[in-house]
Image 1 (cartoon, rainbow, N blue to C red):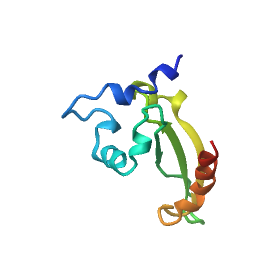
Image 2 (cartoon, rainbow, N blue to C red; image 1 turned 90 degrees about the vertical axis):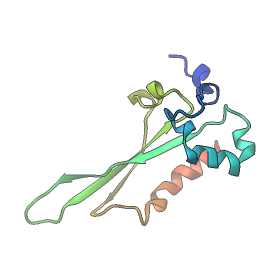
Image 3 (cartoon, rainbow, N blue to C red; image 1 turned 45 degrees about the vertical axis):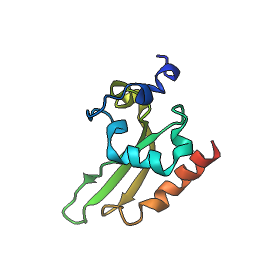
Length: 118
């Protein structure tokens, strides 16, 4: 599948007033206003990061234990591409008994460092 030709889809396929892709949302527009140099080139890669925790096992004698996989996908692509398995990149697992929202930055720091080096 040729991906490079689709990496500017988010820029050239907007329909005013229609919310069908993250590029149509207020957060995307706000980011473009705050970082106009980045937004000026539609080839710059925009990544979506998501996670959903689950309890891997529960035993009567132990407390529940959860895992939070962190997945990254390029939002430059059309939805039918960026929301498919081949464009979802598993970057880490946040272990622990609870939701990691308070300390998730500790687990994401190596990913951010790697992305800065690219």
